[in-house]
Length: 335
Image 1 (spheres, rainbow, N blue to C red):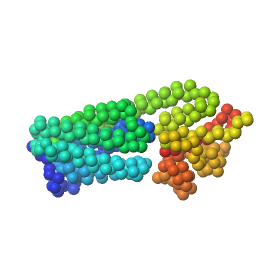
Image 2 (image 1 turned 60 degrees about the vertical axis):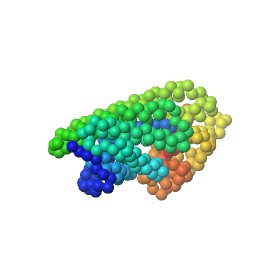
Image 3 (image 1 turned 45 degrees about the vertical axis):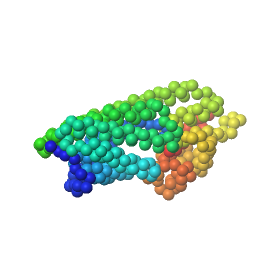
Image 4 (image 1 turned 180 degrees about the vertical axis):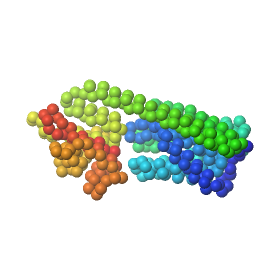
């Protein structure tokens, strides 16, 4: 019967590499819960976590987890503090699970007591994970509502024990018949595919609901200044952005207007949208070749980086808006 490897055990490098690959695969199969500009992402990492704790111990599982997450983070346009937080959180997750297993002194995976301890370990990890993410969000965005806690905890407490069950079955079967991995592989791939499809369906349903709510909200917007500001706020909340600016050209006896809505209510103006010589605005409202413009810090040239730095943003989306008088306005989204 398989037993838990000690943390000081030097494992097979190939085993650690395969464990890191398993973490990568589960990391990219994620479901998310959003609150304002922050997102809590969870994925079925409990499966490779349990396998790692049994086969290579907590230390090498943490190494594989961090390496895998680093690969995933490099593909995402996250800010450095957020990336650092995610990597630190990955270490804490493995440390918590390993501490629970060691504190309750389990050894053989064949024991039902061990199964219960593993379930307790992953559920503890889920709670600690949500509490740490919630605390970070509270520091940046304010206290999340109860719906966030329910939405973040419920999937973790359901998916975690299921992953433990699958991992224990895989360990028990392959200990007797190592070649059983060839049979378990397609089964695990099918379970992962179902999870990904469910996550996609939830995401699409939430997107449709958000667009529907946005449309209903826009219908109630009035033609006055308050209505324009409400429209800009609705766009920012729909896109979960840091700030949105709408520049409108002069109309009749009114001068040009700039309406800004930003998270935290930090001001009604920032450099860029009201400047006709600004790069993003100039490209977006060009009457010959204008259209939506998207700048990203990771792929920007020198001139584009200057435009991003001017706004203190990592991403900027600019788009032309045609008014009822046929003149060009400008809408900008920053994150």
